[in-house]
Image (cartoon, rainbow, N blue to C red):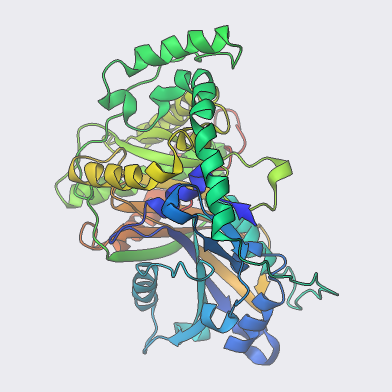
Length: 505
């Protein structure tokens, strides 16, 4: 039995009638490489069932604490049913990309059943060209972007022949703990909560102005952070506030601000990683800078289409992984975030890339002094019983006013070699992330795989019904920068890769 962290629980608390807390991925598979040239539902079920010991979150279910006075626990499901979790459907002819995306839109809009392990998988037949798809969604309370990629890796192979797992560990399902025992433990934790909060103040107060939207919305918060920095040094809780400029990032009004509806639109597509790396070398930037610039260009064009281009930059939230090598293979969320302006207001593509690069460097400087666990620590300041109420109230407030940021852009590193599932070659893996009232109606997540960047865009159907246009605009943005690179002499220093970041979604 393992208890969820305060940050894990926030993804449960965020769920409403219009917001779901799961993230997922759409795998496009070529069955011609599999035995017999096909993959059946039983093949997928047998594969997952045989590797549950490598993908432990897939067998966990929630155990709630009485009265909600403490964070819930994960426990192995004694009644685990692989047939419930893995299903199959088929697309009608002709089975094109947009039909597949529409089916994913409907599936991702449905919440997961909290009485069971929080995941589902769908084997989808009828795709054009004879390919098949596997859509999997897992609750964000159990995984983040990096642990989700590790989970995907556990179910994939590097060869057509699935690896043989001899004598896998026996799965011993746990007994459900007594309600009295959970209640007693929760009461003890409540008694310790004020002490933990007081002890955390010197560590967290210097960084209170880094909470999304606080510096721009709450008067005097920067002065409070500076005072906290002095307190932190006096109590030896840390080095105090890092002395760098912290601009007040205010998200401008856009057509895709919340509140969101319960309906989704999904679109996906790939760009060649080699072309992006060529631009990286030509302009002396990072791969992540190029990705952010492509997103800025695509969003600028979409906003122009809708006569809604703001005069100031959009504000984007970039999830970051803080998972250490020692935490590799563990579930749960080890993430942080940083805010950065997305220069959609800049007309020239070269200047736009330069602005992106400058913005990301400054954002990283602001982020560096933050404790790795600051997001988890801030999430744990409130007692568990108040966490759900405060999270939902905040979502309603932000949906009724203005979002903390306009959109999420996340970049997740993946394998750069072919992968196979049940013998079928993985052609592409497209992230399917989440949107909320607080984050606006669009999430752009990209995962690198085998020489390509696989983009998955999730939007609110009512706010961005034409999300497929953004896929076309990303391709056009890459062509635009490529032509610009051909006109200039390659210069600058190869800065290498940006730190990997994740959602996830």
